[in-house]
Length: 334
Image 1 (cartoon, helix red, strand yellow):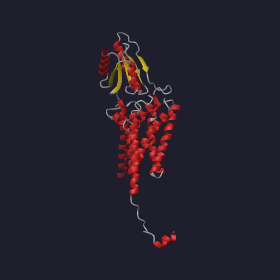
Image 2 (tube, one colour):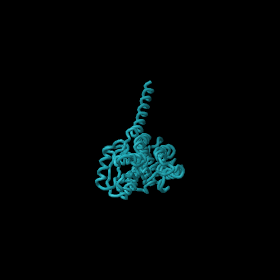
Image 3 (tube, helix red, strand yellow):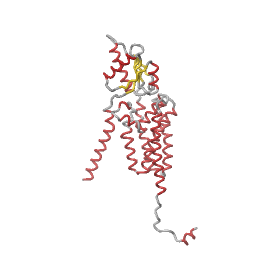
Image 4 (cartoon, helix red, strand yellow):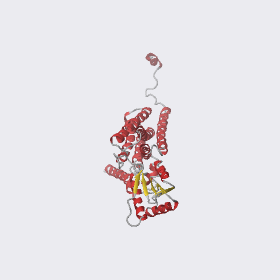
């Protein structure tokens, strides 16, 4: 009976942790500190900035620019999610749904509200331009959002299966790297050529996916090589319960609660998702940071594997239970 009680208690804790990990970021998701640009004369920019702060306090981190071209440059460089253009007198909205469809909708709604406050009487429809749009075959970005979980699971399953089926740390590392290449090519082909969810260069997108898979799988292989199955389980829990919910792939890191969005970008799922957006829709803009994060995790995993191999070499061989063979027998065997 004690064993049953302990098992039920453990299962209750596990399901509670799972629910918290996935539901908390979704339920508490809101816009905060989202970088946007406001273009136009300084007095108008100040007025709109104050209006944005009044409508949604703390929601936006506004960068004032002089003209439309400057605002567009910030969006294409992934330094802003969108812009409100005041250069023509009437507010116009510039969005980038490829950066985040939910944030693009929020900026569009705010632009409509600003137009109603700007005009007397019946306000005209707000002019909205999607500067960096999602592909026409997947205008909601559903494929990219749905691909976040398989990307994480791919790295976890690679580490687990290689551990169970392949002997030798070097062979496991080679297998993980090979799978990162083939898995990246396969996932990019499905998302880009079949589902139409990605734009950009196919090989660049495949490289981004493959780097994410390699970072996850090699980290888990390194943990398992040093700490056994407990290390593998801990690494898998880290990637699944923290990395995946906090990746911000379905919304944006700035929509996750508090510090969790920044933390998610330091883990392979978040960095991998951000890198894929950069290669698919922004010609590689802002790809430097996620590449560094993923390479750091990959190197960390390789170092753990190397440390495990070095420890195994230094471990003294177990003595033979029968002791050394007699000299005569050895000579005869030779």
